[in-house]
Structure formats: C-alpha cells, structure tokens
Picture 1 (spheres, rainbow, N blue to C red):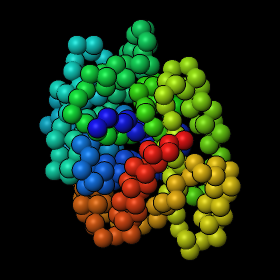
Picture 2: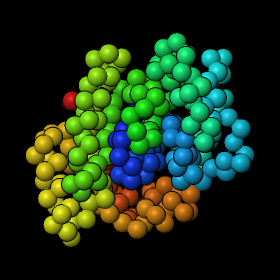
Picture 3: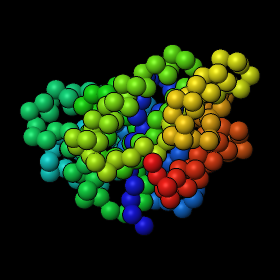
Length: 257
C-alpha cells in the first residue's frame, strides 16, 4: 500500500488542527493503517497531547530539517496510541531564520520523507501561519485537510489559504490535492454555527466533508490526559465523528478532488 502524506493547514489558530491530527491518526491506526504524525508547530501542541515527556526527547523535527545527514527515523517516537510521532519544540521557531540560506529550503521535509519506509499514512500538523514551516509541509503533501471552525470570522481567511495552496501546487507540488474542508467545533444548538456551516458548503460545495466535528469539552479533557479522544473517551460523539472522518478520508481516495 502506498504512503499518503496528509497536511492539516489553516492560518487561523484555534480551529482544531492539532485535535484533528491526533484523532484522525488514531482512527486511521484503528483501521489498520501504519501511521506517523509529524509536529511542525514550534508550540509543540501535537507532541503535548500525545503525552510525550518532552524533557526526555533529544531529537525533534528541527534536527531533521537543519541537518542534511540526520535521518528522519532517528527522531521517530513510538506511542501507546497506535501511531508513531516526530515531536517538535520551541527550537523549531529558529528554523526559518537558521535555514534562510539553505538551497531549496522549502523542499527539506519532502526530501527527508522520500527516504522513509514502513508507513501508509503520514499526517502533519502545521503552525497557524503560511510561513516557512507550512510551506515545507505543503511541498511534501499528497493531500490537504483544512479544518474550519463554524464561525463567520473563521471563514474570512479561506480565500488567502486557497490562493496559497494553488500557488504551491503550481510552483512546487503539482501532485498535491485537497482531500477536503472539515467543519470543526460545530454547535448545532446555535443559529450562528448552522448558518456558518451552510455558507461554507455554499462556497466550497463538494470540498466540504460530510463529517462535522461537534463542539465538546471532552476534547479539552483528553488533551489534559495526554491521550487522543479516541482513547480517552472512545464512545463520545466527537470520537465517533473522527472515526467517520477517517472512513470518509479513505473513501475520498477513490475519487479525490
């Protein structure tokens, strides 16, 4: 089975990128995929929510990017959640400046992933920006998943993101495709959330996943526990939604946009 690289991208923070990354990874692992998560955010949120003790982590994605001789496999950490992870910490914030003069610097991650074997799904969590780190992820992407909070303010930056994706596809990564736009933090009790979801579907039609992720405090509770929601509360509505998302993501591979 070939390996697909999924990138979770959105320049707005607080839309559920990290939560989606970890729970989609757990759901795909439940389906039998061999999954690797990569944390490309200097804040290291993905590393934190998987329960990794960062004080014991000596090698991160920063080492992978800055050292041409450093093997990606040397930074992989096994977890008890069914997937592996490459962690990140604040050192990654220095990457953009430190690698400013690096030849083909936007392709550093893609080059390292090209030598990686043994995984069928790689999922990359990006920072809330469209800078160097996100561009590296997009250059390596097979597919893009765009989480969008169902609030009107969250929809305003979509045009900029789509323009960036189109430019990367044209100039750097012609094989990249959009898997889908994922409505997150959906509160079906409010008119605002319902109307924002309707507008998202009107604007992007079939790009929008049928699956929506409901607003729930269970996500915060699972974050504090250092476990994916699928492990912390596997019968919750949000956990079921992430399993549904994993199935939809896989089904879309048969007719990917």
